[in-house]
Image (tube, rainbow, N blue to C red; front, side, top):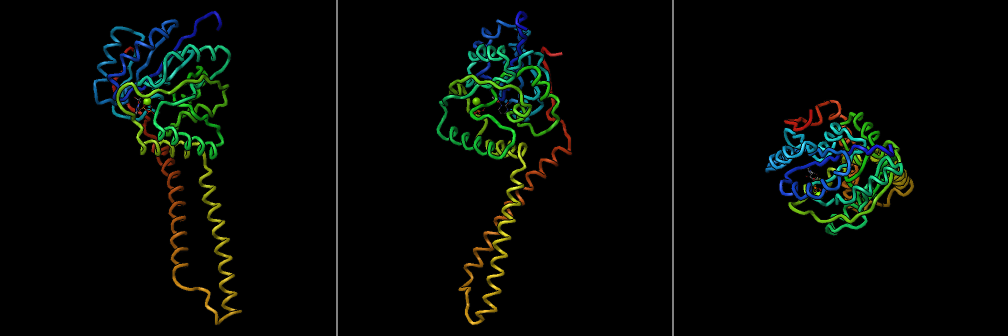
Length: 312
Ligand code: UDP
Ligand code: MG
């Protein structure tokens, strides 16, 4: 492997990123030209001129390839499609908006040469707002408490994978693709390089709060069944409290029949609301898992490809 230069696949998911493609390529190409390479753009059903912009580039350079989705299937599906097509010994995924600096790639490749099979670009500092930074922190804390697969924090989808890891991913048939977790699941040797996550060059994030919450829930439900366990514990605990209450109320009735210990409906009302809430939350938790099972059972394709350019 030392003598032969590795073949490099770079996967770029793009969703309405027309303005970012040319700036990205002008940074990326000088860096990857040292190797044999391919750059696979996966268009996730963009509504702007992303596809046309990429197509122009594919005509100039055969190493630039395009997979275009029928509609928007989401970032993780775009990456999944890229992994399926990538031919490289090394596969790198990078965002189109230049938040992930391409000049980190040589450093990542050096790590790979040292024997690391997964090299994460870890966000040492973020130039993003305090809101995004804190919500991200809370999410990683939560998922790592719940999941038995350790999911590295401060790590996004900017990473290098050895061919072996991608082959593992390609064997995973599941529809719910929380790739950060799936990648870590295999127990491959993990390394890091540090970088500062910049602001977007152009456009706005496709992950507003609602989408981040649903992404986070997806990740948790895919990688942990502990919420179900927690629901059982809560049920068990409140049953004990309830049982103690029964014993208490009945003994009062028998031994102090003339003393009223219930002073009004407040206690009753509070207890009913509280346990009603717990029951609904518990049903919700179970529902999340049933929803996942339902999706898996339906077994629809993960994505539909409309068109491929420079890929045969
Ligand atoms: N993206 C995608 N499909 C989507 C949303 C986003 O392919 O439905 C792409 C997007 O074009 C970008 C990358 O995924 O290249 C990351 O998205 P974004 O920059 O919006 O996320 P953030 O960096 O804010 O987490
Ligand atoms: Mg971004």
